[in-house]
Structure formats: structure tokens, C-alpha cells
Image (cartoon, rainbow, N blue to C red):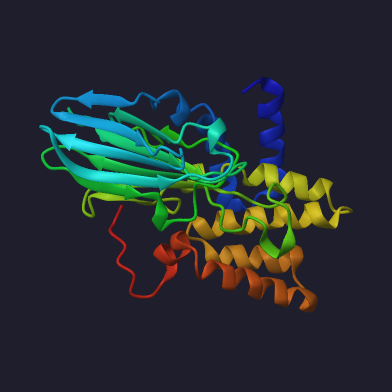
Length: 294
């Protein structure tokens, strides 16, 4: 980050960020330099890939509409990941695979990425640990991710030797009639939980990282007070970042202050209704939900 951007970030921090977020915004200057690896730079489009006693083969149906990743160990098929592809799939690789060191172990993990068709939708991911036994540790179908313009990333947010999986939530894509690129697609961080032995939503753990864009959103709000649609978009940005960070009360307090009023109660109810089907929100807030300590 150059000097001018640093000075701007510091200025915005002092003027627009609530006191509890001052430190968060400052640390964001460092977090922007955290190295992230794009999945497109890691995964392979090879038809066959091997690692130790594992082999993954990609099979495509004759009509090109079905792509299957078959996982074999010592020659025996132990898992299949099948994906039906849409009308735009001929310009994309249906299935990509990679053996990647994610967990700081001596052995790698298997990532299977599959594309189901569309201009920007949809990608799905399954991640498997291989040793001492083969097991699924992440299934993106449980959460509203995979429909976004940006590639998924692997990043060691807390520098503990384990890589977090990051992609954007599409829960509010096309919300209330807005275009796909008009509203918020906030980052969602998934961290491997040793107790649960799988990747789980962790924005509430990595709040500094998850809220690093709030100062920018607040500045855009100040600049767009005369543009109702854009003002609303940046309001929703902040609301969702707070909610995913486990700060729902602050999210609604911000909404009331920035976009409140009797006329917007209906909009708030629409947001809440949409969140009810959000796997990330339910993981964080549903009563009785089992949330392993991260």
C-alpha cells in the first residue's frame, strides 16, 4: 500500500469508524499485504492427477454435459463428484483438481472444483483430507458461495500454518430486484476446526480481516448521499459484514442510523427473511446450533 492510500485510510479511520473499530481499521493496513493464493493458479485441468496412493480421474459424458471426478485409492474408487454443466460450460473447464497442503500437515489435501454453467455461476468445491483416512472436510453446497465474479482464495489469515478458504457470499445476489453486481458480496472466511474436523465459517473469529473494508464502505456512503441506489448498496455492505462477523446488534444499529425510518421497516424485514436461509447466518445465530470453538 502506497503512502497516499495509507494516509487516506488513517483519515477515514478517525472520521468515520466507531471507536471499537479503530484498531481493526489500522490492522487492515497490514492485512491487505497478507499473501493470498487464487485457486485458478493452483488447481489443474489435467484429466488425471496422482498423489501417493491416490489417483483422481476426470470423466466427461459424450454430450459434454456431465463431468465426474472419480477418486481412487490403491486402484479402488472411493468417491465420485458429479456435476451437470449448463449452456455456457463449453468456455470453461468443467472440473479442476489439485492436491494442496492446507492444514500444515506432512500430507496434502484434495480440492475438487466443479462448474455448473452460467456467465458467473456456479462453482462448487469439495475438500478432502487423505490421511490417515479419506474424509470430506469441506462442502461448499452447505453455504451460499460459488456465485461471484471473484475467484476463491487460500490465505493464512492468522499465520498459524493452516490455510483458510475465502469466497464471497451470494446470499443477497439480485436481492429486492437489484442487478447482480449492484449489491454486496461480502467475503466469507472458512477455517479448519480441529474439533469438528472440517472447515467452518469464521468471520467472527477473524473480525479484523472480515471488517477490513468497512472504512472504505463508510467513505463511499459519505460520497453517495445523493445517489439512493448506491447509498443503499454500501449500507448493505456494512450491515452484512457486521452480521457475518458475529456483530448482529451493531449491524442493525448501523442500519437504523444510516437507513432507518418507518418506511424502511419492510426492507429490514426482507433482509431478515433472506438471512433465514443463509447457511452462514444460521451457523452463527440459530439457537441450539452446535458451533465448535475455533
